[in-house]
Structures are given as C-alpha cells and as structure tokens.
Length: 566
Image (cartoon, rainbow, N blue to C red):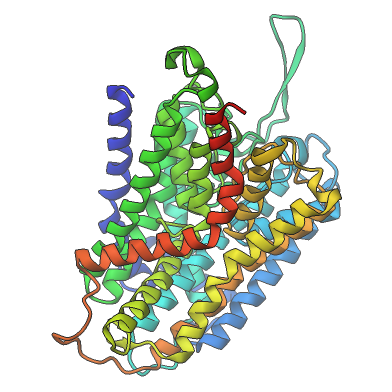
C-alpha cells in the first residue's frame, strides 16, 4: 500500500463519521415531526401528501396495524413494478424499443427492488427502458429504504416508550423518511455526479465510430438521479450492467470516494438517531464501536489478502503478478477492496470491482459480511434494527451468565421476545443454506455455476447469501437468469426482508407496552468496553458457528487448495 491509499481510507472514514452525529439528530427530529432546517420547504408538501391520501397524521397505530399497512404498501409496490417490467414495450420513454421482461425475471427484479436488495439478473442498459428505470426502479430506490427507516423508528419507539399500545403511523413515517431524509441528500449527490460527468438525459443511445473502424453503441439515460439514491438508500442497483465500474456511473476518483461514503452515511447517522430516541448517546457510541471493529477487521484482512501474490505465482514480485486482477484499475486495489467491504457491510449491491476475481480470502470477506445479516452499519434502517436484535441476544446471554432476568434500557426480555429473537436467527440459515443447497444439488440449477470445485460453490453460496441478506451484489460467474434461480432467489429476498421486519415490529410492540424499570447499580451496563466486546463476539460466534462449514467448502477450501498448488 502507498501513502495515498492510507489517505483514501482516512478520507472515507471522515466523510462517513464526521457528519453522522449531526445527520442523526436531524433524522430524529424529522421523523418525530419536530422543526428542522428543511421544515419550511417540506412541511407544506408533507401536509399535501396526507390530504391527497386521506391520512390522519395524528392517528397512531399498534404494531399489527402498522405491519398490515407496511405489507399492503409492499404488495401494491410489487404488483405495480411487476406490471411496469412486463409491459415495458408498450410504455413511453423507451427510445431503444426494448421489450418487456420474461415473467420470472420480472418477478425477481420486482421483488429485488421492493425488498431493497437490488439483485440484478439482467444488464440495465440492455434490458430496461428509461421509464422502467425511473418510475419503476427509481421510485422503489426511495420508498424501500424509507420502509426500512420506518421500521427502525418503530423499534426505537418500542424501546423508548412506556406502557404504550401504539408505535407510530406507517404512512407518516414513510412520508417523512422520503421527504426529509432521502430526497434532499439525493438531490445534492445527483448534482455532484452530473458535475463529475454522469449523464442525466432522455436522449437515445449514441452510435460512436471508433478509430478501429467499428461502431460502438454508447448508452445514455437519466442515470445520475438513480445512482445517487442507489448509494444513499443502500440499494445498489446499477443503471448500467457493470454497475459502479462503468465510467458513466462512476467517472472520477472524486465520484468513487463520495459514492463509497454515501453507502454508509445514513446507516452511521441512524446509530445516533437511536441514541436520541433513548436519550442516551452512550448507547450510540457503543453500537458504533462494535460496527467499526467488525468493519476494520474485515477491511484489514481483505486488504492483506488482496496485496498478497497468488500462491501459484509466489516466486514473482507482487508488481508483476497483477494484484489488480478483477479490481477497478482506475482507482487501485485499496479503493476496490474498500468499496467491496463497505457495500457488503451495508445492504448495498453496488460494485466497482469483480468480486469473483478477488483472492479466495479477499472474496470471503464480502461474503461473510453479508452472512452476518449485514449489521455492520447495514442498510438504511435495516442494518441498525438487525444490530439491535443482536444487542438483545447479547443481553439475554449476559442475563443467563449472571443469573438475572435480561433487560435492555429498563425493558425486561421475557419469553415472547426471546422466541421472536430466535426466529430471526433462522432467517439467514434458511435463505442461504437451505435454498443454496437446493441450487447446488439439483442438476439443472447447478449448471448455472461456471467454475468447478470450491470456487464454483462460492459463486452459488454468494448468490443466495446476497439474496437472503438483501444485498444484491454478485460474485459473478453465476448464471442466475434462469426460471429456477429467479424464483428461488426471489423467495430468499422476501424471506430476508420480512423474516426480520415482522418479528422486529412484534418485539417493538411488546417492548412499548412494558413499563420501564429504573436502571440501578445492579443493571448490566450496555455502553462500556465490556458490552462492546460481548456484542462483537456474539455476532462473530453466531455467524461463525452458522456458516463456517459452508465457508470451509467454498473460499477456505479454495485458499488451501491454492496454497497446496492444486
């Protein structure tokens, strides 16, 4: 690594962490309807939205009514997006006259964007019209992270409120998350990307006559707006097929840095939003510390692996073996590995390098990040409520060890909450191990694997981890666009989204109804180094015990095979 690599990492952390406390406080005030800097602009729009939709913004819902509203909105979004993709050939803003998608691909894509996964079994510029990209995928890039943020806010209220049967109003939370949170940030980043050279146009694709005498079609489109929200909303779906490795999505070193930071900006800020809800920013600092430990460990191991020569070429100096294999050659190995770590620490599927070409251990880091449930910062809302589930599990285990009824911030954890916590622990194993086992054991679906042996297994394992983890990035080399994989990965994405959301809402409703016991000298502290260590170890142990056998068959076996020369 060179000096500029260290400066890049420092700049990345500065752009993520320095604004986080201020943005976190702003999001807390915005979601609770308090006055903010942007209230004079967005309050009239907010009231107009309620008036048009017939929503009583003062009426609150219990967790069941909230969940029903969320599911109804998701179903309507899914059906609308599915129809747009199927009927694309008949809809406007289609200058290339692209036909509608095959139905299993349309189903997979609709589920993908509605669940904030953005898994893409198609190439954007070759398959989707401007209408589908903007009014189909672009809309979901706003509302799907807004749903995640709304669920997180409910969880925060459940912990903070006392003896309450209500947890908020879904329609109000959805509107505020979109208007006050995602929209203004997206406008700023989109303008920056246009300045850097990202297209934002409705012109048809351009045919360029190259120096070699051939013609090349140069795709265009309203890309900057979708790229901005794909990063800020931890969506990740590329406007163009190669995602953020495309020079029209990521044209400069500045765009690369800002897009990387945008992935983690809101998730980091929401850690402080939680602290404002529970009126104890020490809790925020403890959660942030655990996230940073996991992030730095993954990044450090990944960088170490990627800067080592291939064992088969170990006799050559590293400058000659091409450590840029599979990386974004414009930005270098460090920027590629930093992006891969950030995008899988969050539920963001964007890539600026080919994960399939990383070293065995370097490719295992993004895979393991996803398998943890993407709680190392995680997606907008989804990452933090996933981390808070691990907090409750750690508190429960601590209670067992010291012989006390487990409690978190004065709320006792009883049998109902523990059963729901256990249910969430089954989501990733079911989506990854069970669905993935079907994919590699059935002769037809297994034909989608392009590499033999351990690396081929890693391709399939990554695909189903990405689906169940609502990430959306791909290991590549895996032919996912088949009816079987479109349907199975689609089901994995639904499981990964609602297998967490519904238990989280139920836990929030249960906690909100409880009285809050005052914290005393005998209470287990959840803000110091001891708890940070316990939480981090619980996360690693749960992930390690669950997925180590699968990792041993994939990237670990591949690494050992390379070391042994076969």
